[in-house]
Image (cartoon, rainbow, N blue to C red; front, side, top):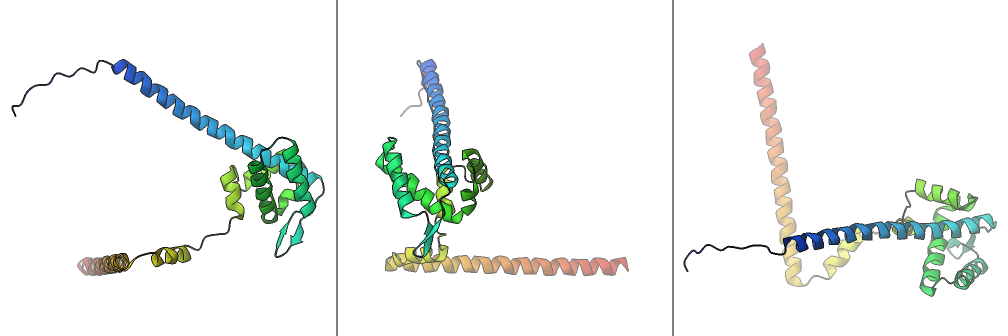
Length: 197
């Protein structure tokens, strides 16, 4: 095929630029809306926790764990439903508060939603995700890795062993090179010291 010159003109460059700018604006607006949503979610938690703390409710032993008394949890759920909160949100907020309070009992000493906000903020809890992370059990990485290894078929397992062996060999070679480099550096130091004498 002969090398021919192609003349190309982007006839709709202005429209394309406007569309891309609009998309970028929507992206920024979505981020702002996400931040507003997170603030609203945290405000709801702050008010729930403050109302519980101010009411004088105490945590009780519930089996092996501590938590709010059953009657308080039932009342909390009912009052949220009566206020028009959807069933899924009633469940989420009440369960998260129930799990958070035993790991942050200092929240029970708060006197209003502002002091709850300050306490949560001091603990680094600025979103629902961080709130849940506060009481979520820590994942044992080795156990999780072992579970993943057990799912491998024989060929994948053999490949895993090969990769581990290669990585161990590379690490050993790196350590040997570093040790040799240290030895050479020591030898150079000795020679320089001898020359200085």
